Image (cartoon, rainbow over all chains, first blue to last red; front, side):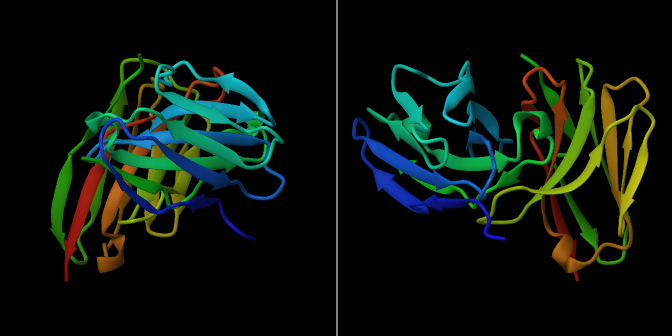
Amino acid sequence: EAGVAQSPRYKIIEKRQSVAFWCNPISGHATLYWYQQILGQGPKLLIQFQNNGVVDDSQLPKDRFSAERLKGVDSTLKIQPAKLEDSAVYLCASSLDWADGNTIYFGEGSWLTVV
Amino acid sequence: GQQLNQSPQSMFIQEGEDVSMNCTSSSIFNTWLWYKQEPGEGPVLLIALYKAGELTSNGRLTAQFGITRKDSFLNISASIPSDVGIYFCAGNNNAGNMLTFGGGTRLMVKP
């Protein structure tokens, strides 16, 4: 079974530029999550989708971050404009259903460095 | 918001030694989870605990769900070099089924 796929793996941008990350969850998984993991910290949830609807985005900095999952499968996370403090690993994860949120499978992450 | 405190922050041990790490919270959780993250990878689920007092093993790993539902510990017996990584606890209070992660315990094993 293929895992959660993310791209790009690594990205370096200058502050005030924009960046987009893509995620393809495990086939058949209805729930998709984006987490931000700053170096030395645990992952922090940014947004959770159930199919193509948003379940929770309370910790998403909406002035600069946006995410969508238009067809309920792939998802894109965008940052515009980026700040230095956005340097982190952006982890995409999926689970079979929101009620099965405990069994969350993570991708390898997209590493962002803002200079 | 909810916070999970993990200790110790890091450990450097000799191969073959047993390891113990714990996680505490000011809030109650209905589920406790332990993940391991290796360099360049995403977290991988090791053990899930669903009931207060529950003790669960997965090979050389044993974890317990504290009876107050505010803490959990993870033990690794007879450590080996491939145990190296960062171990995260995570709590789920079933409010939208979202996980809150601790800050991690970095484990280093000397062969």
